[in-house]
Structures are given as structure tokens and as C-alpha cells.
Length: 282
Image (cartoon, rainbow, N blue to C red; front, side, top):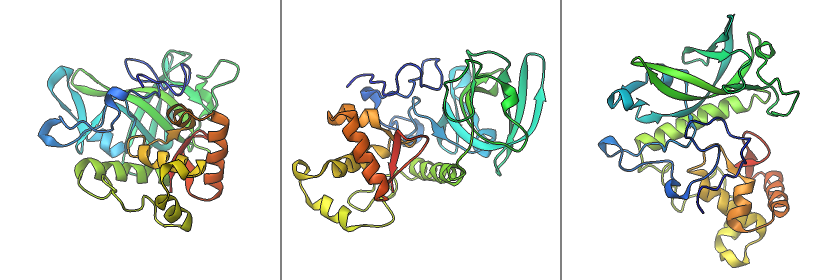
């Protein structure tokens, strides 16, 4: 598998040399063992979940062409959430001050510029084509921001790629748990979080899990095979394993994958993350 883009050309979060949600087998890992100091670091094509505090404390390493790091994590493509505290519209752009409990940060959205960040009010980009309507957002709204991190004049520059209003507030604690998990994985690569080994990937072990682990792969049911696949790839796909990726790698029609995923959700063995096509194990 080389450069498989599971999302298609229109579903990514931006361009600029990053993979738009696809998967590259040449670097199919969340970590780079050749990073400075021997610690693994995030591969640039993955979106890193962060807090505002982590962004505010980021430092530039490697000079003008280097990268920003915070707490051992390389920042290239990031996701953070927060509540809009202040909106300052200007002639060419609008500034949004966003606070997440760890700090305050300001992002800039260019007015009526579809080539930069776009607004996604209901996690659905289809509409009348005017997806960059800044008036959709009000003070007090909780939003998810996906951005790229760049250096400009020795200062960190946040280039907003996507802003989405948060409708399901379960996503807020999930995001912070994801930040904590990735922080621990980066800074303690030998922990059980980084190398779960033979231990359960979830909080509970059901009879179904025990039975599925005892069966050889050839005799497992399709939901069990899909569950094993999600567990295997969830360590490097922290935003969720996409159903199209499952279908491609397992060579199973997408409708059968969808049925298996729905069964696993009903059984409480996996949950959806950003939408109904990306899943992580419980």
C-alpha cells in the first residue's frame, strides 16, 4: 500500500505537503525513532492533539527551517478545542480568542477566502458553497480547530485549516484524554500505554474478547476481525481508524465493514470519534 488516501481528495484538512487524511506505508507510524535525544516523535502527517498551553509553550528547534516542539512533541499539524471568548472582526479577517482551561490563544480567519480555513458548522462541508461565513460563530461557542504550525520572524504562526463547532460535548473530555495519552506515549515509550502487549486495550474484558483472542484469525467472525484491526492501528491513528481503510486493507466490501462496525458499536466494544466513519476501541 502506497499513499492510500482513504478520505478522497476533498475531505482533508489542508494542503501544503501534508497528507489529507491518507496513509503512507513508508512512514506508517506515529513516531520517529531518529528524533533528537533518542525519543520518538510524531510523524508530520499525523494530527497531534494539543492544549493551548502546549502551543503557548512551544519552542523553535533547528533554526529558521526547524520545527516547533512542546513537551517532547513536534508540532506540525495540530488539533485543539476551546470556547470562543472574544471575536474581533476586521476588514480582511476575523480574530477569535479561544480558551480551553489551560490558556488563551488567538487564531485568524481570512474573510471569504476558501483557500484557507473553512468553517464546518455541523461537520458537513456540503452547502451553498459559502462555508467561510465567520458570522456562524458566537462568543461562548465551543469549537475544534485544526491548524498547521509554522515559523515566521522567529515567532510561532498558527495557520488555521478548519474550524468546527462542537455539537457533541463528549468530544471535549475525549480530546483531553487523547492529549494525555499521546503525551505519556511520547515521554515514556516503554509504558503500557505505548506497548500494550498482551494486556487488554480496554478498561474491561468481556467474554467476547476472551473468546476472540482464543480463536485463530481464519475462524474469527468479521466483527472480531474488524475489532482486532482497529486495536492494531489505533496506536498510530489517534483520531480513529477509517472504515475505508479497513475495507481496503482487509479486502472486504465497505457495506460489510459498516455492518461489522455497527455491531461492535452496539456491543460497546468501539466508539466513533469525529464522525461515523472513524472508530477507536473501548
